[in-house]
Image 1 (spheres, protein in one colour):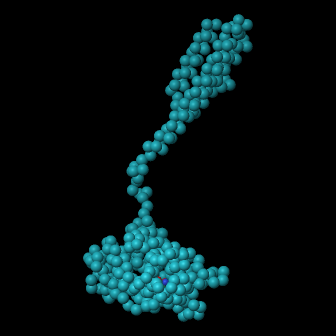
Image 2 (cartoon, helix red, strand yellow):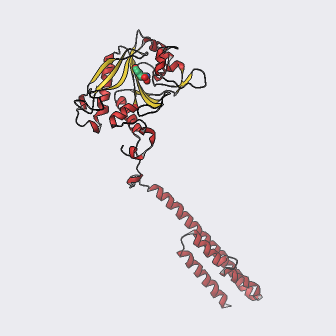
Image 3 (spheres, helix red, strand yellow):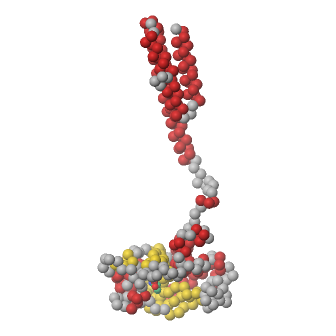
Length: 353
Ligand code: DAH
């Protein structure tokens, strides 16, 4: 029966050794089956008890039981150790995550030209002290027209091919100018802000028209605001905007000039059209149609009726406003000739930016 003691000792050693070199739960499970499974080595030895004599039982039963307990215990301990190691490794991995580590070039995305131009416009105006305003895309007749001095049946409504919604007096805003009125009603004076957002018109889509487009509205209201404030703001904005354009390398845009022509919009009086010197040439090119001037955006002094609609006394305050389409600006800045590229999603167009 020394044989049984020998077998117990050997099994203990073998199990301990095998566990030592195993390092994952699957292997440990295999070892458990090998030793303690239904036909496992230890189970087999235990099943022999029934053949023992009374003396042998007395001598070995408790040792065999102890072997079983011991084996179960060290397998359990090893399993827990591995789980702990795994958890620690996870924590360590998290802690040592390197945010500056290498990222393959091809995975890099970039901003859509629209997003780039929006950021640039916002940054320029923020640097001039403007706030960023916002307004709803679904508007009422009042904000989109009436409050902007375009009452019902006013011919100026014809300029805007409006998407009317099923709800009465409700529409998709045809321009960002309604944000002016929201600002007047909701912000304390003085006001200086821009609002960039989507606008909608019932237009057939072609190379230079879309039914949905982005506009930027600017509004400044304070005591003694004059047209000179508008001109200086427009000039500085355009100079900075086109300063960084690669296409303008042969023109000194630092002192890019502007020109003013009269213009009509019911919500401004007087109204103006602001042109800028062509940033691409000195003597005429296709962009400026050989005139050396590019029509860029309209604006003017806010009409007293609009100030009144916004709850502001036009005897005490005055203001200027302007509005322009982002698409035209982006097309000029990046030399893009078809408006449809912006939403086309074609990679060979987008990857140029
Ligand atoms: N809202 C006008 C449009 O979309 C653009 C505009 C003109 C805005 C003159 C202004 C402005 O603020 O003063 O056609």
